[in-house]
Image 1: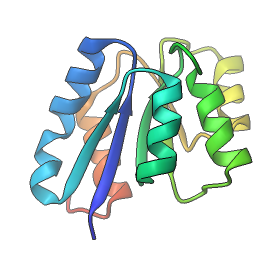
Image 2: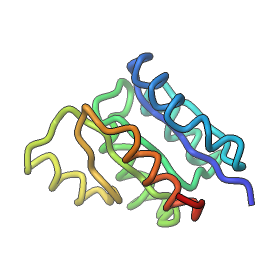
Image 3: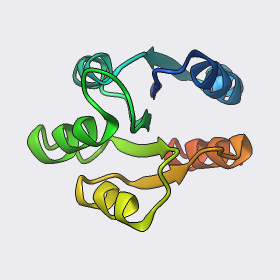
Image 4: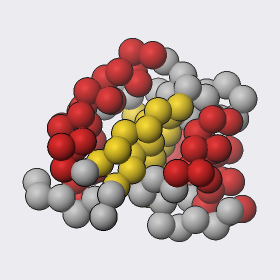
Length: 127
Protein backbone atom coordinates (compact mmCIF):
# COMPACT_ATOMS: atom_id res chain seq x y z
CA UNK A 1 0.00 0.00 0.00
CA UNK A 2 1.20 3.49 -0.83
CA UNK A 3 0.87 6.00 1.98
CA UNK A 4 0.41 9.75 1.62
CA UNK A 5 1.31 12.47 4.11
CA UNK A 6 0.21 16.07 3.63
CA UNK A 7 2.14 18.98 5.12
CA UNK A 8 0.09 22.19 5.15
CA UNK A 9 1.73 25.35 6.49
CA UNK A 10 2.04 28.87 5.12
CA UNK A 11 5.57 29.31 6.52
CA UNK A 12 8.21 28.04 4.06
CA UNK A 13 10.73 27.21 6.79
CA UNK A 14 8.17 25.10 8.69
CA UNK A 15 7.23 23.24 5.49
CA UNK A 16 10.91 22.55 4.88
CA UNK A 17 11.52 21.38 8.45
CA UNK A 18 8.53 19.03 8.27
CA UNK A 19 9.57 17.71 4.85
CA UNK A 20 13.07 17.01 6.19
CA UNK A 21 11.57 15.30 9.24
CA UNK A 22 9.60 12.89 7.06
CA UNK A 23 12.01 12.44 4.13
CA UNK A 24 13.23 9.04 5.36
CA UNK A 25 9.64 7.78 5.15
CA UNK A 26 9.74 8.25 1.38
CA UNK A 27 12.07 5.22 1.19
CA UNK A 28 9.36 3.24 3.00
CA UNK A 29 6.58 4.06 0.53
CA UNK A 30 5.28 7.37 1.92
CA UNK A 31 4.57 10.13 -0.57
CA UNK A 32 4.94 13.67 0.79
CA UNK A 33 2.46 16.27 -0.43
CA UNK A 34 2.72 19.96 0.44
CA UNK A 35 0.22 22.83 0.62
CA UNK A 36 0.86 26.51 1.38
CA UNK A 37 -2.65 27.47 2.52
CA UNK A 38 -5.88 26.00 3.79
CA UNK A 39 -7.74 26.10 0.49
CA UNK A 40 -4.99 24.11 -1.24
CA UNK A 41 -4.80 21.71 1.71
CA UNK A 42 -8.52 20.98 1.51
CA UNK A 43 -8.29 20.44 -2.26
CA UNK A 44 -5.35 18.04 -1.85
CA UNK A 45 -7.13 16.15 0.93
CA UNK A 46 -10.14 15.64 -1.34
CA UNK A 47 -8.05 14.68 -4.39
CA UNK A 48 -5.18 12.69 -2.84
CA UNK A 49 -6.83 11.27 0.31
CA UNK A 50 -3.67 11.30 2.47
CA UNK A 51 -3.82 9.05 5.51
CA UNK A 52 -2.03 11.67 7.64
CA UNK A 53 -2.18 15.47 7.59
CA UNK A 54 -0.01 17.89 9.57
CA UNK A 55 -2.07 21.07 9.42
CA UNK A 56 -1.07 24.54 10.61
CA UNK A 57 -3.90 26.35 12.36
CA UNK A 58 -3.15 29.89 11.19
CA UNK A 59 -3.10 29.88 7.38
CA UNK A 60 -4.60 32.08 4.67
CA UNK A 61 -7.80 31.33 2.72
CA UNK A 62 -8.99 28.67 5.20
CA UNK A 63 -7.43 28.17 8.61
CA UNK A 64 -6.52 24.73 9.90
CA UNK A 65 -9.56 24.53 12.17
CA UNK A 66 -11.86 25.20 9.20
CA UNK A 67 -10.09 22.60 7.05
CA UNK A 68 -10.23 20.02 9.83
CA UNK A 69 -13.92 20.72 10.44
CA UNK A 70 -14.73 20.34 6.73
CA UNK A 71 -12.79 17.07 6.47
CA UNK A 72 -14.11 15.46 9.65
CA UNK A 73 -17.65 16.88 9.93
CA UNK A 74 -18.79 17.87 6.45
CA UNK A 75 -16.97 15.50 4.09
CA UNK A 76 -16.93 12.89 6.86
CA UNK A 77 -13.53 11.36 6.11
CA UNK A 78 -12.73 9.69 9.46
CA UNK A 79 -9.82 7.65 8.06
CA UNK A 80 -7.74 10.79 7.57
CA UNK A 81 -5.63 11.39 10.67
CA UNK A 82 -5.28 15.15 11.26
CA UNK A 83 -2.66 16.70 13.52
CA UNK A 84 -3.12 20.42 14.13
CA UNK A 85 0.15 22.31 14.62
CA UNK A 86 -0.05 25.76 16.17
CA UNK A 87 1.60 28.43 18.25
CA UNK A 88 -1.69 28.70 20.18
CA UNK A 89 -1.41 26.37 23.15
CA UNK A 90 -4.19 27.60 25.41
CA UNK A 91 -6.83 25.18 26.66
CA UNK A 92 -9.60 26.97 24.73
CA UNK A 93 -7.63 26.45 21.49
CA UNK A 94 -7.05 22.78 22.26
CA UNK A 95 -10.75 22.34 23.02
CA UNK A 96 -11.68 23.91 19.68
CA UNK A 97 -9.28 21.47 17.97
CA UNK A 98 -11.05 18.56 19.66
CA UNK A 99 -14.45 19.98 18.68
CA UNK A 100 -13.55 20.17 14.99
CA UNK A 101 -12.31 16.58 15.05
CA UNK A 102 -8.52 16.82 15.19
CA UNK A 103 -6.81 13.56 16.13
CA UNK A 104 -3.99 15.48 17.83
CA UNK A 105 -3.19 19.09 18.71
CA UNK A 106 0.48 20.02 19.06
CA UNK A 107 2.06 23.35 19.84
CA UNK A 108 5.08 24.85 18.13
CA UNK A 109 7.95 24.46 18.59
CA UNK A 110 7.47 20.75 18.08
CA UNK A 111 9.85 17.82 18.45
CA UNK A 112 10.57 16.41 14.96
CA UNK A 113 11.38 12.98 16.43
CA UNK A 114 7.97 12.88 18.11
CA UNK A 115 6.25 13.77 14.81
CA UNK A 116 8.19 11.05 13.00
CA UNK A 117 7.17 8.47 15.63
CA UNK A 118 3.59 9.63 15.29
CA UNK A 119 3.72 9.21 11.50
CA UNK A 120 5.27 5.75 11.77
CA UNK A 121 2.48 4.72 14.15
CA UNK A 122 -0.28 6.01 11.84
CA UNK A 123 1.29 4.23 8.84
CA UNK A 124 2.04 1.06 10.86
CA UNK A 125 5.74 1.31 10.02
CA UNK A 126 8.48 -0.04 12.29
CA UNK A 127 9.72 2.42 14.89
